[in-house]
Image (tube, rainbow, N blue to C red):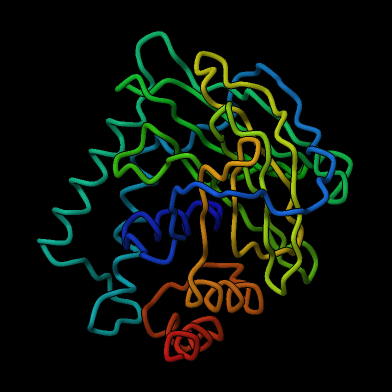
Length: 291
């Protein structure tokens, strides 16, 4: 399993609160920021090559291993399991997630949009995959391919339980390229939105006109994909004309945690709690959380 996939499962199991806060509001004036050219998103229609999230053996084994790292008792070589209560909650959440993201009858995951990542290699690309979930809602997944291998973060979107995907419905994927941590973002916005304003760590602001393709079968959604490079976004503002229709901010704690992740990239998952606690990333997290 690729690391990006394992980290997605960490977030889903632990239900981290630092995933950004979303508010919807009206704004009298649109910020005066020059718009950049929209990302060159291509509409495509191709079979999804990798639907790993439907593999029960991957999901179950990884869930137990990740929860093991959260146990109070330390362990080196011995296998450890979550408590019966946590195990039951994991099972319930896993079943709910699988039901929600199972394709509806007559639907199958297909790649609907592509963004070429030219600065990362001639064959590097980001794909957005879409299908109709069993509930009839839109399901999404991203896949990043550098020509030598592909990986993604698993299903997200309006079909996923919890209602987290509202006007701003995005997923982020990070990769270590050389010694630099770089990010991509993919997802959908309401088709009525026409501009996205991004504030980055350090104060830089960029604005993008939204003209990506509409989602087949779900014309109320428009595709958005962007190569963020090493930029760390701290605030997203979504506009329709002069009206702000949604805003998402990272908390100060989340920004500190993200800085830790970028300064201390993890290439392999730790096998024990003790190993995880001694890692530079864990120590950085501890310092960041104490502020």
